[in-house]
Length: 199
Image (cartoon, rainbow, N blue to C red):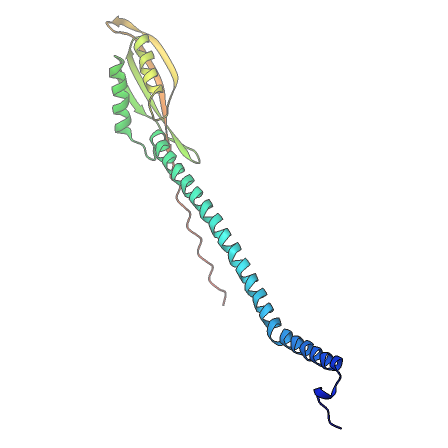
């Protein structure tokens, strides 16, 4: 018995072609399209990961720029504050500044005695005992000039006595403590050496 497509009726031939087409489609789908779809899905996952990493990098760049701007602003503010709270005691500069204020206020500095500094965690208080001769009005101008100075100077323990005998433009003697502040630069402690291994 001879088999051939010509011997089948027309609907058998159509059925055979359909069966062959379905078989070829399934084989094509299993061995070619399936792996390509899996590879494409893997590439899509990789692409999504890279897009997320790119978005995170952009966000990090924005945050870094904001952080750098904040650091610049803080450094600028720190530099401005160092004028108010310097890092070291500047006896000669402070004495010259107080002398200038006194001369501008028509006062005479009779004594300028630095006292022992009191150290705190971040700063040290540096009191200076002053003795001044002049008038009440001149003393007020002197204190006003000190209050407008960029560096912090607190004046306390003010004692005013009438000068006996009073002189021209010198009717009082005032004693006061002018306290300025110095920034303490705390060194970073060195790590303790590791103990030697026991033998």
